Length: 453
Image (cartoon, rainbow, N blue to C red; front, side, top):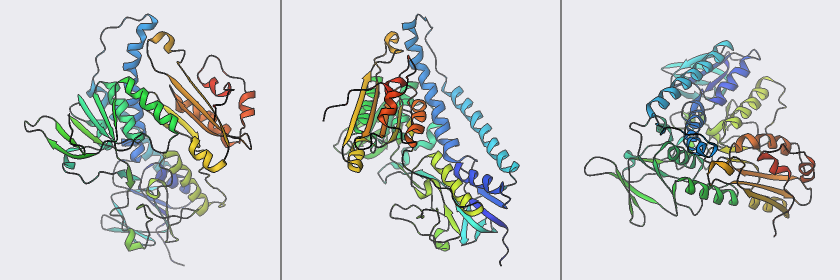
C-alpha cells in the first residue's frame, strides 16, 4: 500500500475548502490545505461579507432621510468613503485571522502558494510536491469579462470595495444578483447609477413577479435601469477624465467607473486538471458525480468550481458530504430542492423553492397567492417603498413549493419559512399558524385569496 504525506489535501482556502479541511482533521485524518491568497475565499474577501457591510452602509442614507417622518431633525449627513473602506478592511482581516486559527487549531497544515495537480495523488506548490490519498478542489469561481474593445478600462466585482476615488457616476453592466446588489449599494451611497442589461428583465431564474417588482423599486430609489442594452466598447475620454461607453444601438454614456457583473466562471485555469485527467463539463466546470467525485476517483470537487448552485452555504454543505464520504459513514447527502437565497438589493429579495413558471412545469396545477403593500414603517417615513410577497402552492398536495419576498430583511424572514418548506408544510399549515403582529412576515400566514387564473 502506498504511503502518502496526507490523507486529504485541499486546494482552495475558501468556505468550502476550509470546512472540509477542518472537519476531516477532526476525524483524525492528516490534512493539508493550499491557498495562494487570503483565507476565506470570495465570500469573506470580495463577496458576501463586504457586500452586506456596504449594503448596511447604503441603508443608513435611506434611514436618515426617513427619520424626518418620525420627528427627527438631522444635520446634512456626510459620507466618508475612505472610512468605510478602512473599517471593512479591518473586519475582513479579522475574519482572515479567524480562518487561520480554525485551521491551526484543527491541526491542518496550511501551505501558502498556488497549487497544481501533478497526478491523481500529487500537488505541486512552489516547486515542492505533496502527496495525498484524496485530493479536493475547492477553488471557487472568478468574474467573467466579455472580450470587448476597451475591456482594460472596466472593473469587476472584486475591485468594487476599494475603488479610488468614489465614483460619482457608476455604470453597471449585468442583470444578475451581483449587478443588482452593487447598483443598489452605490446608488444608496451617493453615486448616480445606470444599470444596463442585455435581456428584457433583471434576475434571470427568479420568479417573474419578483423580477418586475424589484426593478420598479430600484428605479424608484434612483437606479436608472435600462434593459435590452448591449455594450460594444469602453474608451477613456480624450481629456482623460471618465469613460465613454458605446452601446450596440450607437448611443453613448459617460461614467467614472464601469462595472461588468456579467456572471462568474469556475476557477479552473492553471490547476493542472488536464495533467491529472480531470474532465470538465460543457460549462467549463469540473464534472462531478452525486458524491462529488471527478473523473479521477481520488479527486473530488465542491463549490463554485463545480457549479451546481453558486452559494456559500451550498459549498459548506457539499464539503460536509465529501468528508462523511471519505472519513465517516458515507450516509450524508445534500438535497438541492428548497435552498433559500437572498439578494441584497434595496429592497432585499428573499426566495425559497420554485418560481411560478417552474412550479407549473414540475407540478402541473398550482395555486398562487400574492400580496403587495406599504410596510408599517413607511406609513410615517414618507418613503414610497412597497413590499411584495408570493406563495406558490402545489394544488394536488397543498404543499407550499414557492415562497418569495421583496422587502426589508427579506432574507431574515425567508430563512425561517425555508425550514417549514423543507419539512413539507402545506398551505393549510401556513393558514393555521398564528402570525406575529405587527410584522411584514405575518402576511405569509394570512394570505387567503388566491390569484385568478
